[in-house]
Amino acid sequence: MTPAIITGLVLLAVLGIVYRLGYTMGYNTGRASGWVSSRRIMCPKCGEVQQAAVTWSYPDPYASHIHECTACGYIITESEWNEVGE
Ligand SMILES: [Zn+2]
Image 1 (cartoon, rainbow, N blue to C red):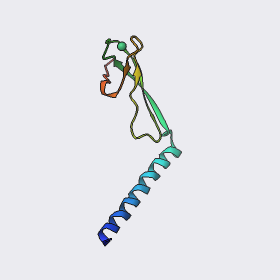
Image 2: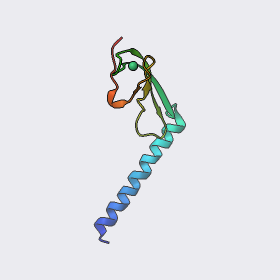
Image 3: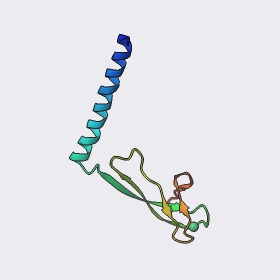
Image 4: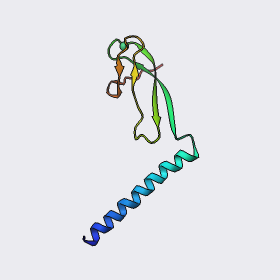
């Protein structure tokens, strides 16, 4: 291996450790182990406006936007997530 490749690999390893450490520290010091946020969304199928929860749990990279419509039972996913104002 050339020195450039070795340097690149070492850099990647260090970045990975720092990334992991940040996660771990956030997890230990605060309430960063997860959160729930209440939103008003409209069902794309029946138009019912209702409360839905956006949730995130450590160590998921993304918050989850999944809700079952209270009126028609349709499963609303992130691509159909349509937030409406109060
Ligand atoms: Zn619906």
